[in-house]
Amino acid sequence: VIGLFCGWTLSIESFGRLLHQYGLSREALAGMDIPAGKNVLELYTKESVIVVPMVEVDSCVRMACRYCIDSTAEFADLSVGAARFGGECDEMRGWNQVIVRSQCGKDLIELAREKGILEFREAPESALQDLKNAAAEKKRKALKNIVEKSGSVKNLLYLSTDDPVVRKYLSVEKKRKRKS
Image (cartoon, rainbow, N blue to C red; front, side, top):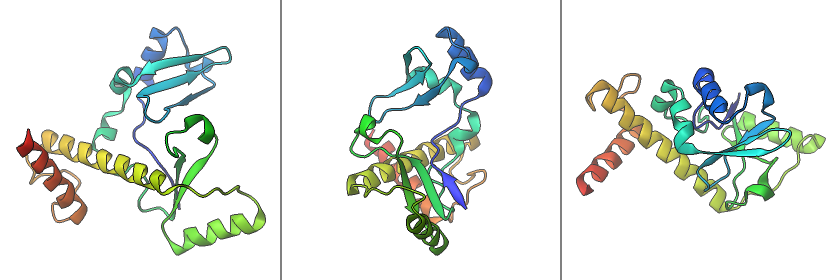
């Protein structure tokens, strides 16, 4: 199984309205990117790049995404997503970062290497740490939203309070509230 990194997806209706505010249609888009550390969404057309602040994009995020704790396809054999090494966006455009999570995934990567199907480049340790930090933040926010939705830390909707990952992030959230 190959899984994709995903922080969220956009509601097609809400995103269409946002594009309209910028004088664009979905058909006019040639691509999109979220450059690391800039807190913006870049929309590419044939003629230009339109920069949209993430605060505006947030209203387009699907509700279900606000309750999802898995941004890196943790149960896949291979997890793949846009590379963000050291914040050098332009240098990393077109590259993906891969996490090998199983023997099957390792075998697939080795086969691709042997056959010359993929290009490989070593990722700096900081890239993995950045990814871990982003995944941890996604978990923290999702659990906070789930608790708000259910009204109780004892009712986590689709999650179990016995799950060690859930317990870890709930204890982090409790510590944050005590500091506030």
